[in-house]
Length: 381
Picture 1 (cartoon, rainbow, N blue to C red):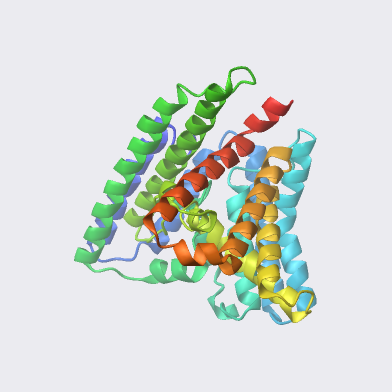
Picture 2: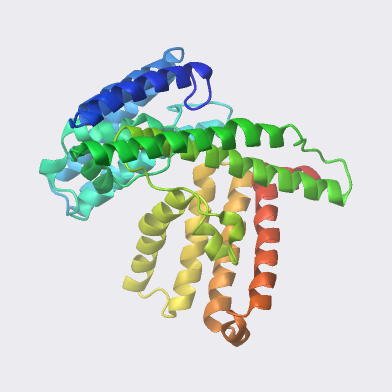
């Protein structure tokens, strides 16, 4: 069974939602039920792939041991580095082995679950999660919550724990349930109807004239958005039905007027995760060691590192790495333009300038999609 794809999943989701509605509308907490139903869904997902199930269980054991090891002395830097490295190890092994056509320690959702596990480790180190709040049940629920398991959105642990422990009133939960059902329906339209229809016309090829290649890039970008937006909306919907206010993942990304604006609208939970745990920490590290004194240069370098790491996170393949490097350069250039170019500062609010900026941004965004999909490599090859 595949989450948010197979008919059997939606049948089980309808039954799980009905039970959740009965529990939630009666004024009881959904935390224990949510964990139980998440384990049940994941058991169905991994039923026919025992190797992946073993990889998941191994990951959970390593991640749990790592966070408890750090919790003994959260401020010890060696413990912190060991814990982060151990938690990242399964993902690194999976990505490296994929280069050789293998999938060692790989399982569905390994990338997103790793982000959650690493996030908890970092927050324990920062003192945001004390040891007494690292109960096994809450930690497992956050990691294994099935609506967000395979492809996000990437929730934040403290926000998730607050929702999980909240006892909602009948009217409050009824509102969440209604919104959840609407989000599920909207997501199904995006993913099952619109994305499927667009995909019928998508046929990547090195052949064809320039206009045909432009059409291919446009179709891929629109398909990627509709498919992922559909999944994200359904993940939000299922989360709301279980009493968890899952964060939004997209906010009209094709209305962006520059690349920074685009990344504030596209895959929001991923970009903000990288902003908080890569960009900001790299910035502080550089400034603390005074490797660069100019704040603009620090920000530009941080953008490059941030997006390059994101590229490697997608996979160790030239298209993903080139995509990360491409957007890193664009973000760094945009930052420099906005901070130092007087023409931009004088005209940035003018309608004609915003229209031109929007058009250029869309061209750059869809060129990025062409790099990500491998279309550019196909043409160059």
